[in-house]
Length: 389
Image 1 (spheres, one colour):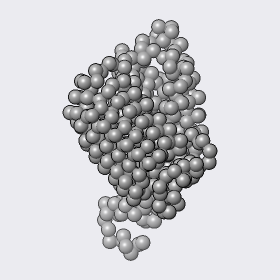
Image 2: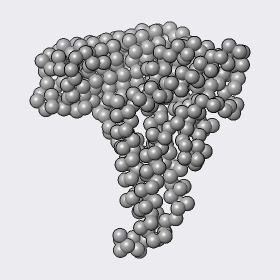
Image 3: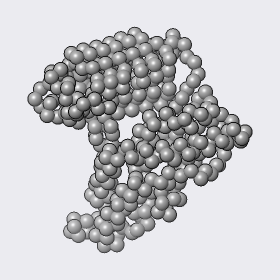
Image 4: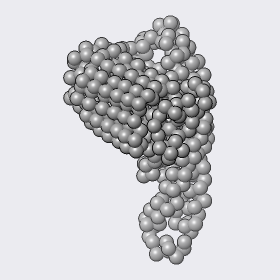
């Protein structure tokens, strides 16, 4: 080691340390965190929902007392000071329209040590490695670099809250909150909107089907991301290449629409009519089509694997896989697709998986004889007993 870096100046040694030591350690710890989250996500969701339920009950009491108007936004905010103290927490805050820009402190905190213990491990590994550089990389340099690494770890809080939302929306306390027509829940760093991401949105403003279809066919770059679209029929639309990342479509008719080469990262289709829709070539990481009608839909050559990492950004795509539970996939096509799909209780009569990479997918054992698959495909699928859900 000494021979290979001895001729480097201080800047070159720092860059060598980051590329050769620190970033590989970050990749390792992000992968370890991903594995932990996948194994414990239901328990994590359960614990978060308990705190969120208490928070919502208190919020309703505040509204009943006339101390808050209709809720416009809930923030789940990382307190950086808590990380310095060794007890990383997220604070739950609620705002009405009049208080959106005000500083508010809430006693409701979610402890996220399960996330940042992996960041602490990263720091320990990097601290040990920096000592090999004969004093050329001091502790403050490492500490400054570590402050820049929060985001890929914090992103798992975003994943956790998104995953918990199925339970949150069923809470009587959450349903009882008086909400604005436009309402959302965001995970963020405290008072930092640049590190803020929407995890759930309700948009109760009424759209006419004709105007909504025209709006979608404009194919704006960013207008549909995180959006909530409900109770419209936009069938036979030309939406090729549309960016619906993290959008939530509820009771939407899309029959025979062209959605080729679209971006549907984390998109949720709730009780949607997607028969004969062409999704070919689209990016579908963690998309959710539970209980949708997808009869004769085309998913040829889609990209939707699980655990695909961008090491440069420290980001993993495909946390859960694509959810097709209970969907009608009769005569749908997945030719040449690369996806990890949950096909439990889906209707798979006549579904075409020719040349598809189904690594990491789930199917019921009872469907083994109903689906035409190659030997390699059968080996790559996890076969589940009974009526799993």
